[in-house]
Image 1 (cartoon, one colour):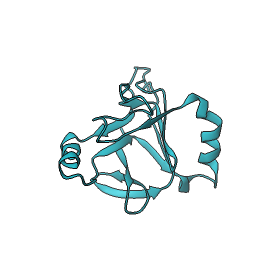
Image 2 (cartoon, helix red, strand yellow):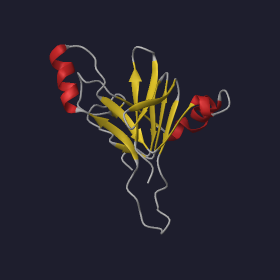
Image 3 (tube, one colour):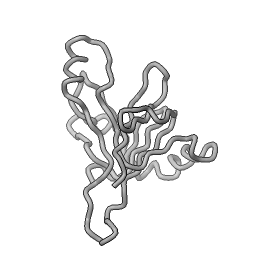
Image 4 (cartoon, helix red, strand yellow):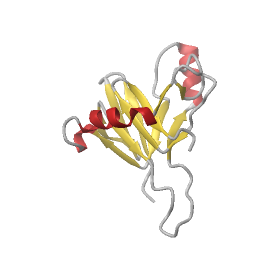
Length: 144
């Protein structure tokens, strides 16, 4: 099975950073996290393989110190940036599928999890696909 990859908002470089095995392997304004197929080669059902993770100790440090730190991530096994596609491809893709996607957000001062934009009572932990853009984060099949 491929290694899990994490994506976080890099506030200093004003982009997303992609981290695998503890090392930043890519950066981009647009990052696409797509899950593994929902069935393995033998046809057995696999759990949803893309999602969000909030490190609660890091969040508590933000609340205590009122200073941002890296503690919230999108994760998945297939992660690509806009550099892996023709110019404008991900923007066009978002325009085509936006009606099928749900916008999510995270604010450590509001909730301890990622949630549907405008509805802090609707946590989103897993999805079949995550698209991180300069204008926000979008998911397909939240909590698949």
